Structures are given as C-alpha cells and as structure tokens.
Image 1 (cartoon, rainbow, N blue to C red):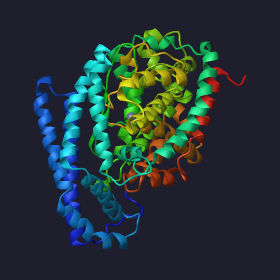
Image 2 (image 1 turned 180 degrees about the vertical axis):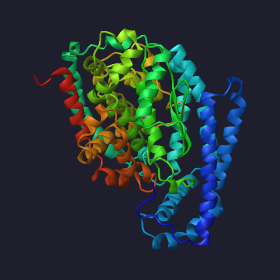
Image 3 (image 1 turned 90 degrees about the vertical axis):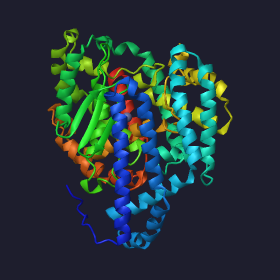
Image 4 (image 1 turned 30 degrees about the horizontal axis):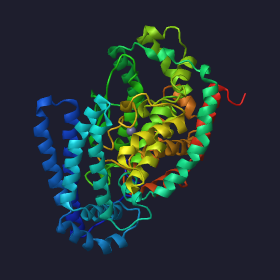
Amino acid sequence: MRFSWYKRPAMSAAYEDLRTRLAEIADLSRVIGLLFWDQRTMMPPTAAPARAEQLATLNRITHERFVSEEIGRLLEEARPEEESLEYESVEASHIRVARRDYEKARRVPPELRAEMVRTAALALPAWEQARRASDFSAFLPHLERTLELRRKYVACFDKADEDYDILLDDYEPGMKTAEVRAVFDILKRELTPLVAAVAEHAEAVDDSCLAGPFPAAGQKAFEMKVLDAFGFTPESWRIDETVHPFASNGGIGDIRLTTRYREHELSVFASMHEFGHGLYEHGIAPELERTLLCRGVSLGLHESQSRMWENLVGRSRSFWRHFFPALRQEFPSLAGVDAEGFYRAVNKIEPSPIRIEADEVTYNMHIILRFELEQELLAGSLAPADVPEAWNAKMAEYLGIEVPDIADGVLQDMHWAGGHVGYFSTYTLGNVISVQIWERLKLDLPDVDERIEAGDFAALREWLRERLHRLGRMFTPKETLERVVGGPLDPGPYVAYLKAKADDLYGLSA
Ligand code: ZN
C-alpha cells in the first residue's frame, strides 16, 4: 500500500547522500536487533562474552557514523529543501526526524555513553543476584551509580521544566512530566476507590480454572490458532521460545515474536501482546523501509498496540465466545468451565505485588508508584537506600497490600538496572491510548465485537494499519495521536472502560 500523497519528488544530491547514509544507519540498527534476538533465543550460553563485544562494536560504529560531521553538514544543506517540501511528505519528515535524533545524539559525550553501557552491564547481573538472594544492599551501589549517571545525562541537555522531562523524552518524545502527572492523578483518584469497591465483592469472580495444568503442546496449538486468525503468516513472521518474551524485527517483512510455556500460565496473553507490537512494525509503509522513520513512534504508542490485542481484544467476551471451545479442547482441566466463566476468570481484579501479573485496573497503580519514586530519586529527595521502605508504603497505600519479599517488591523489575529511568510511565500511557484508539475505531467499525466473535480480525487490522501503523515515525507521538483519534491524550475513555468492565464483572452499581 502506498501513501495516497506519496510521490517521490526529485531531490537534491545532498538529500540523496543523506538518505544513503541514513539507510546504512538503519541497516546497522537492524543487524544489532537481530544479534540481540539471536542472543535471547538461539545462541548457546558460552557465546555470551563474544556476543557482548560484537554488540558493543556495532553499537559504537553505528553511533559514530550517525553523529559524524558529515551527517551534520548534509542536514544543514537539506534545510532549505525541507522547508520547501510539505510537512507531511516522507522526505521532509525524514530530514526533520533525523535532525532531532542527531541533535540529541550529539549532546551526549562518547565517554558518558560508554560509562552508561558499562554500568548497566554490571548492574544487570548484580540485580539478578540481589533478586535471587532478596538482598537489596547488593543492588544498592549499582542503583546509586545509575542515578548519578542519569543526572549527568540530564545535564547534557538544555534545562527543561523538570529534569525528569529529559529522561521521559527518550521513551515518549515530546511528553512532559507534568502532562503524565495530570493523567496519573486522575487515574489514582478514580482507580483507588474502584480497587477498594471490587475487594468488597471479591467472591464474584472465580479464577481457579487458571491454575492449569496447561501442557506446552496444547498451548502451542492454541496460540497458533489465535495468531493465525490475527494475521500471523509464516512468510513474514516467526515465533520462538525465550525466557522473557519480547518482539523484535529485522524489517517490515521480518517480524519475530517470542514466547514461553509454563504449566500454570497461559502463554497466549503474552503472545497476543507481542503480536500487537509486531503488527505495528509490520504495518509501516514500505516507503519508510531503510529510513529512520521505519519504527513505531514511541513506547506509549507501541504499548497501546500490544495492550489493545492483549486486553481489548484478548480479554473481551467476544473473543472468548469464539476461542474458548478450541482452548477447552486442548485442556481437560477446563472441562467444567464455560466461555463466560473463563472470560470472568481472565479479568479478575485483585491487588498483587507483581506488576507483570497485575490485572488491567491494578496494573496502573504499579506504574504510578514507580513514576513517583523515580522523580523523587532523580531529584534527590529520596535516597536510594530508602527506596524499599518508600516502595512498601506506597504499595500499602495504593493497593492495600504488604510486600511479602523484596524480590517481589522493589527488586522485581530489571529496568533500573538497565539504566531505564523514565520508562515505566509509557506502559500506562499505552493503556490510556489503547482505549482512546478503540473508541475512535468503533465509529468506523461499529460491529467490531461481532467481528471478533466471528474470529474475523481483518477489518480491525486494516483500520490500524491505515490510521496508525503505516505512519511510522513521520510525525511526533502527539501529532500521531491527534491524527488517529482527533484529540490529545485523555484518560477519560480508559477510566470509563475500566469502570464499566469492573461493574459488569462485580455488579458494583447493583
Ligand atoms: Zn509491550
């Protein structure tokens, strides 16, 4: 499919030179992604040290090529041409986005960049060990060092309204901390009483059928049935096993999902989630391949797509009306359950200490807690040594639960060890955006529930591609959201969706 407005204009030699150089950068980034995919799926363990060197070398070469004086000169030469082109053109977008990336990349000295990589390489195994031993003190020096480097990173940029803005910008370009805070304050205000109200009616939903066992063979068979119906084709997609599932891609026609099979966990939810990420990358306009525009525009928009397939589709009543018979066929343990009972079970709302196991409602409280602690840590108003206490206090306040073990408390996520401070909020932004997009698409596809119940996902997939996926990074995340839903970020539809669902499951208004 081509852009309706797309006709490749005659461009200057400077632009063509720039485009060729950026295509090489794009190629190198894909190769790095494939090495990383291989590392997590196929690679034998003793290859790890050599692979780490290969990745470091390729990362360094890619970065050096990108921040070269030559690219800077070509970007300057292309400026008048960019201004003469329509804002919406592929070429103007490419120059604009490349310039933004270039200016950001140039701000950070290579020594600091190398130090951040080194620190994360040490912090990740230290975190794994600390988690296994439930020993925060073993991770503490790494957290302190990470925060110190994050502050140095912030100092590389012009002063923002808040320091945290600069970290957030790497994951959700253009988003301000104050905007996220405003959305999160609404969620906190609306969802805290909802969680409490649900707790009063906890017995209304029985999820004992989710205990399994679910042998791997049955899981694989069922998962493929779902993914096939969604649009997974062996020509462009693959799925392999890994420890922590993720989606990766070597190009528009090379989408790689990963999954894992455990006896007491249905893999299909994680696989639907990763499918959403994969479909986004698969739907980018072919004209954008081998440019810097050929990626999802932000983590929040990306997560809106994974959450949509996992939750709005995969935890809907219509979905299970269609797929539950096939699931029950695979697993004798589900013999006494029907589609409605299963739908209720997979939507049970119940506070738990672990983020990745949380339901749709309580999940956001986990994120808000991290978002608040990160800001205090960055500002220095919370000492890293005091994080466990602050964490546990917020868990009690927001979810009414006690953290049984620090491994399932502050040590549960790898993000901080990897140097990712500012990342978490994009998960909840994704939830919020997913429902905004869903409400908009229902105007064009009012029978989307009936289609899902019939196992027909083609129209949904096409709508998403036409409206969102094909754009890649041509526009900013805000411009992209505006184009898709016709307005700015708004938690209203998401709150209404969660309330209606909780009401339906727990009969709260009765
Ligand atoms: Zn995701």
